[in-house]
Length: 267
Image (cartoon, rainbow, N blue to C red; front, top):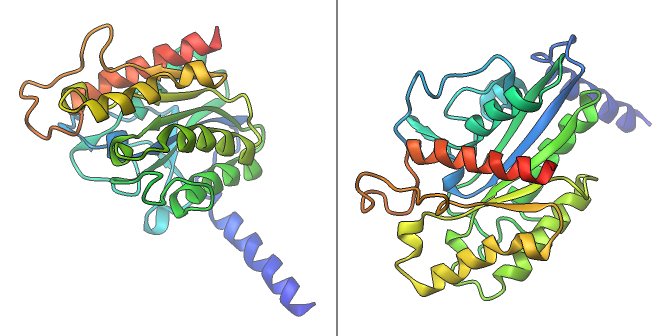
């Protein structure tokens, strides 16, 4: 009985400490879960004006005293492998969402869960894997502890580490179904971004992986594709520089395309 009481007390303190940054006037958080590989947040070329924070947009912190706390969404966001002078597409998406859809007395909350070099084949994103569970647990934490909060979208940017995975389509589709089921959000918009076109075009196997990602919208309901090749190819001044990653301008453009896909799903 004493053990049960102690566990209950510890849980109470754990949750209470992590509500420090919550604004009691906020009706609820519109949650954006961002997960996948390094192209969620490795865009080099941070700009203090273009990438500035927005007082309507927050993130769930991860590191040190910020862990599980609501803090401003300042770049670099607190993904697992964040790097200075790097940005992702999530803040662009969140700003566009806030301008178009955010209701009064609500704020946007990004949950950054990107991890460089992660895939299904290396046991990072299957149900039960550490990074999968981290994304689910953090989202569940907010939904459980902050009233009237809602998961409005999952933004998924991944594929490079699974180019040689012969089961990639099955793994990806299962992942989407598992995330939706574990979060009790079977209809949540799930948007998948394409990999860097210049890098993809160097290999037929990469092209095939890109096609699997793109065609998810034909296999699963309420999914969409953020296309880095249309209406124009997202490129860099020198595409051979950091060939695997979008740069900061590319990330901002990718955020626009994620949002355009989200708008189409809302229709």
